[in-house]
Image 1 (cartoon, helix red, strand yellow):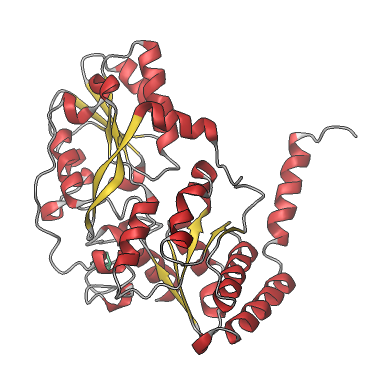
Image 2 (image 1 turned 90 degrees about the vertical axis):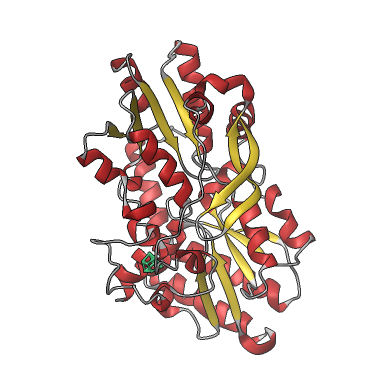
Length: 378
Ligand code: SF4
């Protein structure tokens, strides 16, 4: 059989994606979900997704309005921009003001408010050198073009982003780029799930696990959900049929009294994840405690740069410390991120806080819960 051309491969992928949005398939999965729900004591399931892309997909596809009445959808701390702590924002704003520093960042951080409502957008207006990049590797070009500046890449994201940042740091060292460093604010998903389960107010019955993160980590880091907490979980893709199939698995496991880590996204997520990416992360980073906005310090939920790379660690190199900050007045992002309230329960939602004039980070990021509620349900 002849090998597929790239156009044919694209066509095949598009055909698969279209199938996963097929109305008849989705209706059949909805019926299967309702049937499983009927077998659960009380006929209810509160599930939480911890991925900004799931938040948006569930709204954008209209799934939220189609889910059976007994299902409650909670949006957890799955948007990396939203969970970036005020103290972390204050630290990179302080760096931006230094005349010898150039910051490189993904664009969605530009408007994230820190203490006093200040953001990188305000710092740029005052003349700070902030470059928006599409890949961490772009910041190496900026470092080469600005040899008299210290170029700092803001490493924000979950397990998905960390391997590319690790690869960038290793590339910088191989090229002998001495003016490049990384401010690592990466977060890890499993410790946050553990913390959410310790919070008895949440009553989470099941987790929809983040497909992108699991492509890197595989399923093993989530075994504690079944072994320690007996909570069903399922890795899901991002098309409507992907999400519905994962919800069927969760409801069926709840009905049957099982609590497995399941995978409804096998076409992209191998059980063992991506060993090469995991190795890159282990080479450059080590686990550390991290601050999460509205949640606080979570043990071993962050990634610090190893001492072998101390010269490329912005914290050490520039003497950056995370200082206590006062939360943004009135913003209830912390409760939204814990699934305790819906964005609409925040008194500022849609009145004072909108995507054009955001008060908190959950309204800034396109993957934030407040922004998704505003865009798709207002
Ligand atoms: S609506 Fe705005 S102020 Fe309220 S929780 Fe969301 S981001 Fe914060």
